[in-house]
Length: 317
Ligand code: TXA
Ligand code: MG
Image (cartoon, rainbow, N blue to C red; front, side, top):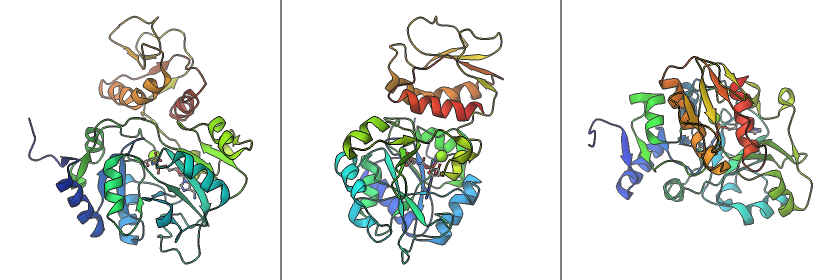
């Protein structure tokens, strides 16, 4: 049954146009992307950006990703380089974010970029957010639509759970296809992956014909957000476990695990893409069911498994 009081609205043209109207008047909207749901605001408007930081309770030192329809609309804000175009041509729109040098006369709010001389830019693929970006003459700052430090939302309902009626409009675009945040790659300095995602270093290396390093050192990570507690379900979590302890929620992967009340299988077929898509929903469910501890089996560290393990490590720390 449709709840007429809900701020969740189907992604038809009428509601997408409403979203555009809100964004133009510097209000925030919950939006779907192919990775996770985001909290969108006008990146050229200081007042919109202030609202994002306030609603998310996000530390001011953690910059936002700026989202565009295509590279043409980004030219005004950043210096696009050779490696950028190689990757853009093969992978965009898609789940990858580029760190580039900011242009001095860019109108992007300084608050959005935490006063850095770089900007993170992304071209999301979900048709709803593309519809919106095509019809706004400003880019959108879109962090994941969760309170700072928490688990990213992958359904419109999750966004409502995070912000309740503080958001007037959340566009429902179905469950996110990927379920983990975009890969973040630094192209402004030494090539380096700052946050792993579906698009991995091997794929990137092939396209730009160079070795791409993974930023392994969490202490020295250039993404300021990665220093803090992140992706956290708010309950203690133990990784690489063979068996569950009595009272924990047990996150499993693959066929060999039985169906028990406290067992949550990320993918019975041992499919890593499916596991990525389910991870954040499972974490939310476990929290809702009031478990006090989480144990997780070992997840293969290949393909998107690298990104899954990265999020699990952060969530457990
Ligand atoms: O998939 C995604 O990227 C999602 C969807 C909604 O597009 N967005 C997202 O945004 O994950 P957020 O704010 O949750 O994560 C942005 C990450 C943070 O770790 C932040 O520190 C990093 O990007 N970041 C932003 N600007 C940066 C910059 N100039 N240099 C280094 N890292 C930056
Ligand atoms: Mg986030």
